[in-house]
Image 1 (cartoon, protein in one colour):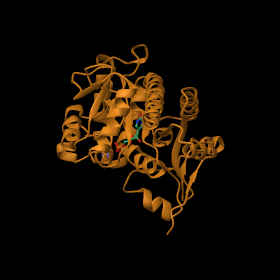
Image 2 (image 1 turned 90 degrees about the vertical axis):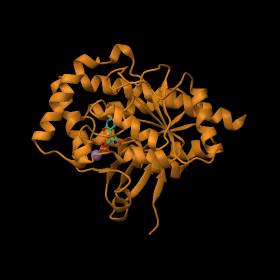
Image 3 (image 1 turned 120 degrees about the vertical axis):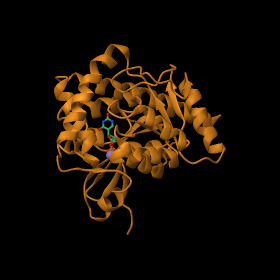
Length: 306
Ligand code: PSU
Ligand code: MN
């Protein structure tokens, strides 16, 4: 079997010229947000990255081909495909070999980005250790991926629907640096702060790029997680979101939602229960992460030229 991988015209040109590229995932488009806001978000994020002087590479599997960068018509089509699979590390090869179509999670996007030579990736929030994981064993494959694939992932912390302290413990065990950007506390996705201190803090994109390069110099596998707080004006404070998260979680339990369906179910219920406010915040934080990721990609480029 040969892997069919196509780089968009824009991405191919940027990689060839060693210009900064930022990878973007597609599960957030197909499973994380409703149409048409998902498409607007995806297009807007790509534009922001270009405005910062980098090139966006949205990653997905379309009819058995791994795409690194989507043309606009492909993006538009994917945003309206309810049948797109949710692909993590375990699912990617089968989707490709059976000529399927699917959107990549954080884990799968990291794998594809690394394969294509892209070192920075922006998303909303990574998957992590779910609440009640001591019984359900529900721990996202995103965490192990951060431990083994050398991509710097910019997120707004772990999604607040998760068990944040357990997620931090596991990331520490796996040797993944968790770096809050510009503050001491770990951000919690919809909220800019949480009750937990971040293990590390860095204040500039250049420092983040240097830390990425130093990990490689040490011969360490794996990436880094950058926890970038949602802008204050767009956040939903913890006191407001926590009871809604609790309700969504208890509904998921009552309806026996398990495995891959858990995260999309919770995001959808929180969207409904907040009457759309969670989506406004989600879009704001993704945009904020894209901006920082583009700055980091530019700083990495400056490092290799130095
Ligand atoms: N961030 C968002 N919305 C999402 C996700 C992240 O703002 O939909 C997706 C990512 O693709 C992440 C996945 O990898 O949720 C985690 O799913 P799970 O918990 O099943 O591993
Ligand atoms: Mn899971």
